[in-house]
Length: 165
Image (cartoon, rainbow, N blue to C red):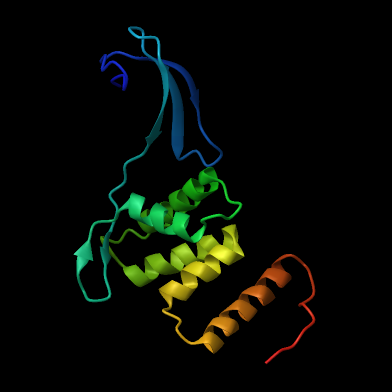
């Protein structure tokens, strides 16, 4: 690994750690030339399936795009970047485990929705409103009511008292 500060081609690993999921190795490195320390992440490289868009076009899977979409939905929500990375790792693992060379974008969207629902209900609603292209206020309200119902069930609380439609 080349030092990002002085470009020295030799660096030393001073610490290695595997996060909970074990899909990534975090390494602390130090350059013997300039003495600076930096962190690298090592992950297994899988052959990811191509994503088949609604119109039939095919694009390469892009981890950064997936993570960016999830980060946007989770903007200003109390979810750490590590939890987002774990969710992206889980989605990638599911994609690889299908064994398919191509996967429909709708299937990937469903995986993202499920991950966001587990991470944060508000982020799930944000993503779902765009994903399902909800333009009708009543449909949006129905989606929110369903999310509230599921959130209450998940947390063992009774459904909130209030006006229902």
